[in-house]
Image 1 (cartoon, rainbow, N blue to C red):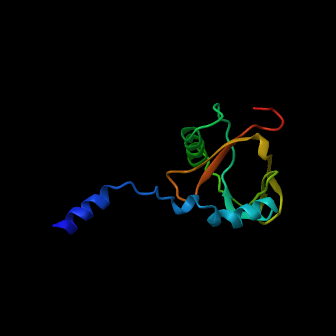
Image 2 (cartoon, one colour):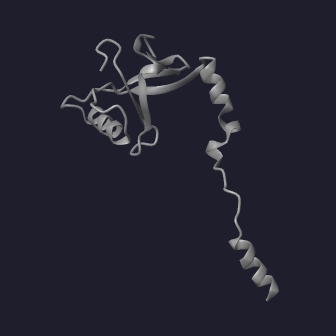
Image 3 (cartoon, rainbow, N blue to C red):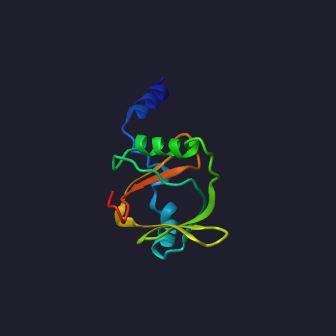
Length: 133
């Protein structure tokens, strides 16, 4: 009986908060080094860009992705590209021709979000360099 009482008492004692694995700094140190040295790259399929009217929010990003996926009647194929991430900005370069698709400074990016509907999808919101929108 004493052992049972001790087990209940131990289970109700305050435990240290468990830190999830994803927030531990050692797990992301290689990525941080790659971003700082401008060698962080990802193979992506570029869907395009669309104007949004809010500067942040998961819902805004999801609506923009929905518009890009469905399209307005004409179904465009995604462009195979490489996303380069650095401390200065984001750059998307077409895989075959090495043509520059997007070159965005990091200061103009206001929000970035994963797509909740597609495991490998993500989007970001930024100001356009020429129109300042």
